[in-house]
Structures are given as C-alpha cells and as structure tokens.
Image (cartoon, rainbow over all chains, first blue to last red; front, side, top):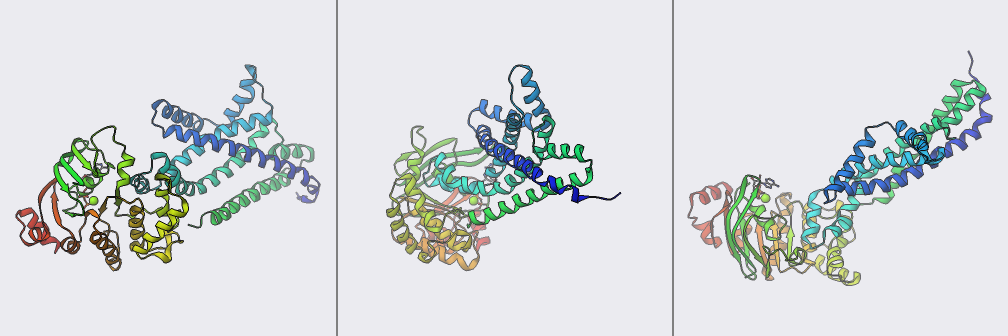
Length: 217
Length: 241
Ligand SMILES: Nc1ncnc2c1ncn2[C@@H]1O[C@H](COP(=O)(O)OP(=O)(O)OP(=O)(O)O)[C@@H](O)[C@H]1O
Ligand SMILES: [Mg+2]
C-alpha cells in the first residue's frame, strides 16, 4: 500500500482553519477557567469553612469525572431540562469549568511553595495580610506556577479534540470528516497529529521565552 | 522600659516551649540571648512581635500591650524591626525596592522620599552600589545587610535579630556583625539571639542564657562569661568556646 500525502495538501487550508478553532477555544477557556480557578483557590484558602468546603468539593468533583462526561452533561443533559447551548458554547463552558479545577490546584501548590519566611518578613514589617499577599507572596507564587500553567494549557489544547463528539468544527472533527471523504486515514491523521504537536511545541517554546523576559529576578 | 515580659508561657500542642519567661529591656540596651538548640530562643523572640501567639503571660513592647485584643499588631510591628536567620529578602524586588516597599505601603511615604531614605540606609550598611540589582546576585552577608536596612526603613524603636549570621559563610559574618555593632553604638535597642559569643561579649549590655524554655541565668557579659553561676550555663559555654 502506498501513501499519498500529495492528495491531502489541498485540504491543508481547511485543517489550518480548524486548528485555529481549536486554538481559540482553548485560549478562551484557559483564560476564563484560570480566572475561575483563582477564585476557587481563594475559596480553598479562605477563613470561612463553607467556602473552603465549596472549593474543595468543586476541585474533587471535576478532577474525578471525565471531561467527556462533563461535556455530555452540559450539551445533552442541560438540553434535556431546557437549557440549550450550541456546541461551541458547550465546549467553552465545559473546558472552562474543567480547567478551573486544575488551575486552582496549580495556584494552591505554587502559592504554598513560596517560603513562609517571606510572608513573615512582610508581616514583621507591619504590612497587613492582604498587602503581604499582594506585594510579597504573589509574584514568587506566579513564577512558581508558570511551568505548570503552560503544561495545563497544552493538556487543555489536546483535550479540545473532544469537541468533535458534539460536532464542533475543531481540528479533530474536521480530520474525521476529511477521513470519510478521502479515505486517506493514515495521511490525514498523521498530518493532524503533526499540527497538534507543532502547536503544542510552539506554545511551550513561547511560554519559556515569556518567562525569560518577565522574570529577570 | 521598651520591652517588658512577664510569666510568658507558650505551648505547641502538648509541648511547652516557654515555661514562664520574665524579661525587661530598657532604652538603648542590647540584650543577647544564648542557649542550646531547641531551648526556645526563636520562639521567645517571635512572641515579642506576635509572629507567634502565646498562652499565658504579658508582653508590653514600645508601649503596646500584646495581650489586649484591641492592640493593632500592624502598628506594633512598625515599631519592632525583625531580622531573620534566612534573610527573607523579597526575590522579585531589587535591593532598593525591598527597602522602599514597607514605608510606601504601610506608612504611605512617597516613592521619592522612600528612595532617598532607602539610599541613606544602603549607605549605612555599605551597599549603595547594589541598589538596583536583584537579591539573586548577592552573597549571604549582603542579603542580610539588605534585610537589616529594610527593617530600619520603618524607623523601628527596637530591632530583633534571630541568629542573623548563622546561615552565613564565615567570611561574611563579620560584615553583618559590623553593621549590628554600629547600630548598637548609635543607641538602637536590640534583642539578639546569637551563637556569636564574641559579639555577645563585646557589644551586649546584658546576656541571657536560656535552656529548656526557661531563663537559666542572666547578667552582664562579664558576669555571665566570666563567672557563670549555673552548671548548665558552664556546660554550654565550655562547648561554645
Ligand atoms: N511551629 C512549631 N510547631 C511545633 N513545635 C515547634 C514549632 N516551632 C518550634 N517548635 C519546637 O519548640 C522548641 C523551641 O524551638 P525554638 O525554635 O524556639 O528553639 P531555638 O532555641 O530557637 O533553637 P535553635 O537554636 O535551633 O534555633 C523546639 O523543641 C522546637 O522543636
Ligand atoms: Mg532558633
């Protein structure tokens, strides 16, 4: 059997367009989800037991159920009770909520890894708890957190392929369509995999470059 | 009286770490605290600015009564500078920013003013040329001098030092002790937990020997080092020298 990558090239623009959908769905859910995640983390670190309990519960539930099931619940489950989201919105909501749980844990680990001595030094200088957090703990915490956040971004990007199950036209869905049109299964998915890989690698590389510029200390 | 402590008890769970400490420090006095590891020296020092809570006893420092619940700890801490064994300089701030931060945030000093005062403090600790570098590039001794300058920027009435030279290379111990000595000569009230017997002997007005959560013995350096009264003090000192 011979491989004909040449036959696939005309479809490359369609693939790239679909890749773009994957990227912006990921980027949007990552930003929204990380913002949510920050609040979930703050809830977990709160003085109030009810908030801590809520944060903990949220993280545990999300992290111990498959993203696919979460997505089905949002798209089909909510549809059944009359709350209808289109595929794009369902994926955005599902991935944001999912990402929030993971980033909350990343923030927690990163902030906890800031040496307690820094906190004490801030307090000993007469700064309030919130001032110490903002001016002393936050930046070292963010620095601790960046590599894990990059990782999480890439994982989320790869997971965005589940959009295909509710026919969101992201990369994997388009690959499947092209596959049934052309029957060039190996070629199509090889190129698809390559697109995922190159994008992930570019994200990792970009993040490292940003870290170098942002953290001169 | 700058510091007055009476019957201070502190427990961690079941473990009683401080078993009734009494202590007074007067204006411009330098008190050194010595004692074996685990004797409660750090815990005692940290009770003085309420980094640790305590169970029984009273602590009055710079006119603030720490046992009163309405005492504003942030106000207390403005008056009480602290220097830690592990420096705890802020890694994401340059040397001068480390020093400017608290005055700007806590006492709302203007940026320009904070910088001017910060530079004067850097001059005092001999680090003017390092103002705009990040701490990462500094030696331990330099970091500790930054930490001292940072504490002084709040114009404290008392300075607490918890083994400020224990984490330093031998070569850089002297530069930090030198700064502390100068501070003492300028009349700063200081409480210093230290293993540097030379410093205690030379600079302090009074030395306090702690063991097992109690003050075993205290006196002038001449008394304590020259003629220790208790067996435990003698045993400790013979090991130190
Ligand atoms: N956060 C804590 N929780 C429980 N026990 C503690 C805590 N901090 C200190 N201790 C215990 O309290 C005792 C006194 O500790 P402290 O740090 O005050 O001693 P130290 O005299 O400063 O010793 P060193 O010379 O080693 O610094 C030790 O037995 C220590 O294990
Ligand atoms: Mg100690």
